Image: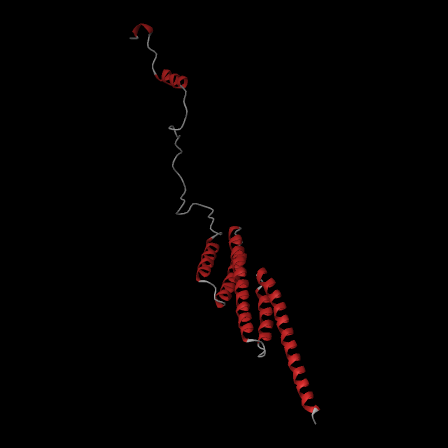
Length: 195
């Protein structure tokens, strides 16, 4: 009769201890998942970053986790996803510009399309407005670069039909050459008539 009360208390204490260990194990698992998420975000791999974030978010749905811990981790997940999308956008913009410089229009349009998709993802995770403006400028540069060379005369560079004029202002003529040139131009005057 007196022993039943102690057994119930012991079972309750064991259950509480087991719950604490389970919560701690979940927190360790979440922290390990953050390491994977950080690695994928640094590489700009958005697909794997989103998958890792989804796994972490599922773990954070446990109502027994401390609310401040869950709130901090959810904010960190969003920050890592933002970083992943910003990195992927920057890399895709660089690829688009490089393809434009190389006059590869297919690669340029493909990279531009990818960059716009990644930019939309970055905006979804609250990217700064100046980042969006900068990416739009980079994409405009990529779009306008390459594929503009004309084979013939254009309105901006018409065909030059004027004869070439020798630039006399920049030629260097010695005094002897100048005297020889003037001697050739003067008619021969007999020596007696020279004044």
